[in-house]
Length: 247
Image (cartoon, rainbow, N blue to C red; front, side):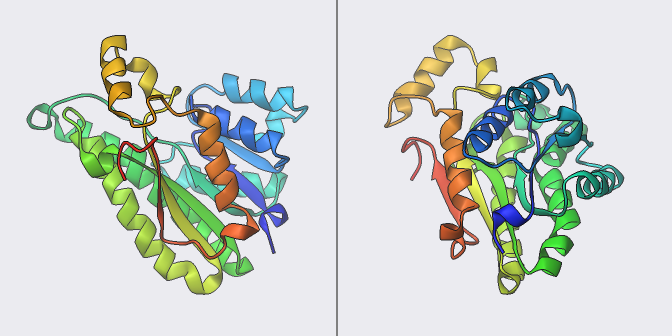
């Protein structure tokens, strides 16, 4: 089997990074895409329409902290597109706050958006991959899950935990020909970076050895490699995509 035998699910596909990743995959010929969204679906519908794909067939709503929602999404995807054999866990989010000022609810919310959603989506789709003895799971972490950053202890903790989750599930699934890897993202020109004031953004860029922000298409290129036949021996790995900011 290979990736073309199943459906590729991209969670968080309507986000600043997600819609660009979907666009990249479409440009590379991957057409059997299931695009998850939670809030607005305007941008991802626009991307799909630009490639002459019916958004009603390729977009799926779910709250990714709800097992019931995720289950309903899986059933709907299988009905319209077939079994999901590639899961790209892009959905996430953060907020700002010093650790001792964060409420328990604020901390838990960010952990749920990043870690729990990854766990629950993986849990729902792993049995299908095991049954087919083939699958690919790509999770997303962050450079600050390793380096830390003030004001985002909840996000740092969640993204560090995604790496541990990835390593454990990779060990569990290797015998079934299911690979599980994580891409640890640096700073990119789309996504939550747009909320950072310009002065702070310039300081960040100056610290990046490549002296620039990443292009979302570079995330797409990394994903395209990890779902290719040439990457079947790579599992349990963390791929740092950050212009040399952390190696």
